[in-house]
Amino acid sequence: MNPNEQAQNYQALDAWIDAHFAEEVRFLQALVQVPTDTPPGNNTPHAQRTAALLSDFGWEVEQHAVPEAQVHAYGLQSLTNLIVRRRFSESGRTIALNAHGDVVPPGEGWTHPPYGGEVVDGKLYGRAAAVSKSDFATYSFALRALEAITTQALAPTLHGAVELHFTYDEEFGGELGPGWLLEQGLSKPDLVIAAGFGHEVVTAHNGCLQLELTVHGVMAHAAIPHTGVDALQGAVTILHALYAQNTHYQGVTSHIPGITHPYLNVGRIEGGTNTNVVPGTVVLKLDRRMIPEENAAEVEADLRRVIADAAATYPGITVDIKRLLLAHALHALPGNAPLVCALQKHGEIVFGKPLPTSGTPLYTDARLYCAQGIPAVIYGAGPCTVFESNAKRADEHLDLIDLLRATKVVARCLLDLLTEE
Image (cartoon, rainbow, N blue to C red; front, side, top):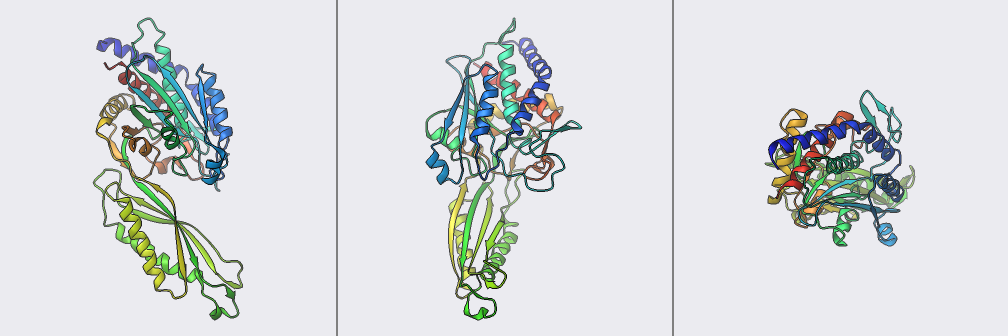
């Protein structure tokens, strides 16, 4: 295809997206308005609602329910993943677009209804408005725009296919989301774009190790504390050792822009039975972020050693350690160049500024595709940083101009990838 014809196709994509943007916003509002709090993880109703909306676009929507026993063993209530396959020719690449619909509970402090999908001053508010129900909209309307221009007089000849993978297990690690789809052989794309933000192309991310520590002491009446062993004081000893490690981690740096150093967070503490009882058991749940340069097995072994050494300094306690999650880091695969080049090319045109490649301290489902040798990058609708979007905080929101621009970038990128010989 000559450059003039391709330029006309880009303009046609942009024009279609502009003309249908109000519809895209309503689509996203409908998705935000169906809660998907995880936990408890009752996500099938949202998948069914999404499938109905996608069917209205004329697509056949595959609903892949993960077996109930497997879902319950994982700590969730229901989980159905969705696949839409749009094949333009028998030959050519298959490009998958993956976003997740499960979210953390809204928490406190909201000034807009967390499931209202309100639009105020050009921003759409609601849990998952930015991460990552927004990219259900980005990817769906990018694909619709691509379909639309194939009906025009000088329609481009597209080679290959696009798949939408809308999944529901990112918050618990993705193993029952994209991991399950790939394990079941339900999809084997050549390239993947996974949900992200619009102002950069992310090619690497941190890994994550989550552990549950159960500190056992001996319960006793608070009037005679010497007859027990205080599990909470033992836990405090362990906490001091863990936070000392956090200081040490600041000296371990990554060479990847956007990623700084490893860090550790103790996100939940439970224990004790009453104010007048020496605590017999305390549970700590911790999250250890690993930079791509670290070895996950070595990180876990070292962390277990730190915990054991600290526990040994407080007589009478024992500690059980349970791994809750191990998500490996994302490393850029050599085959991601077509994705990166196309996204950067069109990102600069649409946003009016260069889009850098970078890493992110998050962990995402993109790693599960790369683990199968499928090159993946992270790109979608959203601001420059997670903090700006209020993701996982009150008043999460999406600037609608970012949704519009990202939809155009993804549509243009798909056109390039499917018109290459």
